[in-house]
Image 1 (cartoon, rainbow, N blue to C red):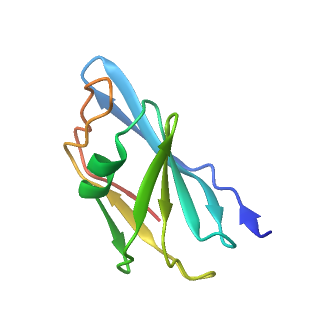
Image 2: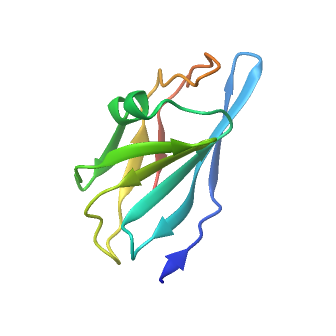
Image 3: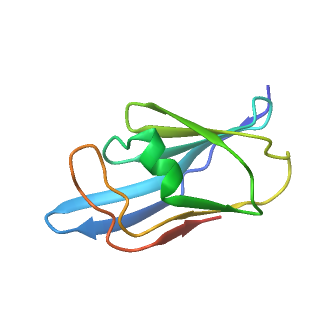
Length: 102
């Protein structure tokens, strides 16, 4: 199983709350990308508020504070994931600026 970890994090302050998201795991065999957040995110809303370049049609599921994207990711290809301003966490916190993770 080819799995590579990535620990880069984007930190964002949303009012009183400190929010962050990072790509926590890329599983090339199962073609999934895990995004870790500081609060749980609802999968359907997460899909609405993200974009991937080059474009990949993905499905999303959640596990705790992780949003798991599954789709036809090509091993070795570089993708850019953009989380759009306004993404809300299950606790109501809002992402106050757009973030990009490569």
